[in-house]
Amino acid sequence: MKTSYALLTRCMLLAALGAVAPGALHAQTAEAVKPIPPMQPVPSTVPGRPDVPNAEVEKQLRNTPPLPFPLAEEKLPLSDLKVPKGFKVEVYTSGIANARSLRMGDKGTLFVSNRLLDKVWAVVDRNGKRENKVIASGLDRPNGLAFHKGTLYIAEGTRISKLENIEDNLDNPPKPVVIYSDFLNHQSHGWKFMGIGPDNKLYVNVGAPCNICEPPETNSQLRRINLDGSNPEVVVRGVRNSVGFDWHPETKELYFTDNGRDWLSEDLPNDELNRVTKQGQHFGFPYCHQGDFTDREMGWGRSCTEFEKPVALLGPHTAALGMRFYTGKMFPTEYRNGIFIARHGSWNKSKKLGGDVIYVTMNKDGSVKSYAPFLTGFLQNNSYVGRPVDVQMMKDGSLLVSDDHGGAIYRVSYDAGGKVAAR
Image (cartoon, rainbow, N blue to C red):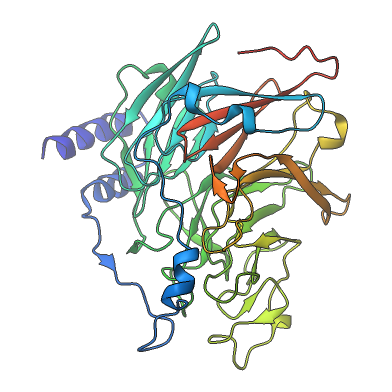
């Protein structure tokens, strides 16, 4: 009751000052006291038959378990990592277990999320020395982050909350204030990715609660809401699980990665890069995969011509996650307005694929020209020594890459003369 009373008192004061409308006051108070909904069961693909390979094959396809603690900096695989000529990769910070999504604050603070753990971190650079601070804990899969005008937004498994004026209160952060909680609670693809669109709205993925199934009406979509949690609406459907999206710096069109289904084949389907040209589009899941073949269970009676095709296929089971358009000036001009994508790496392939950051070259019409490896070396002898999750451009134009396996953030910089500044 204390927390609710304090929240109510604060909102009433803000309302009196004209900062909060009465409707927003009621909505935020109601959201804060809502209980977390019960966990939803995972739908089976085919009744009575689990959609997995036989036991002998499955032994070869087991996932690489995440480390339960971050690696010490000297144990990180920095010497294995490779970048193109003229670029340099270094450890930006370490010691953040399960480091996932990245967002930059207006004052240079780097915010880092968890998925398997319960924390959100702030990394502060003080004259070249970085300090990691926990600014929120006890959260439920707080994978999604967005930052806008001093406020950090956090997307958990079943709710979105905010921390206002967070960069001025890193040593004494406020408790997150819940603004939205209309999500089902499901373990499969229940974590969120989040961003702020050109329209100053929060965009969030709502993944399919399964590997392959007919999803509930509330799922397999990208959704957007106002910054106060009001007016939710579906942007697109047919999205299995997007853990990365961004907007083209010139056209302002939304592009997103999407992870393809499992247990169909080692080589099918590909993960996708998709482009949204209008609201209401459907990108195929669960009926059509990678734009050109229908699902063996869910695709009967459907055609891939009904759905939007991806603009690029990113490899089978590569787990293409975080992506950003590059708008900085540090890298050569040929990188401007292209896309960096972190591929977390396959888990159910006997020969692993991904575990890298790729660069996507765009055509002027918004289509994809090609893509190529950019940061490699996380995959050694068919085993992961690191697993990239997200990318984030810094104000100086360098690129940060999170690794949830080693619990580290890497920085990639460029200097054609070979005088790249060290840490």
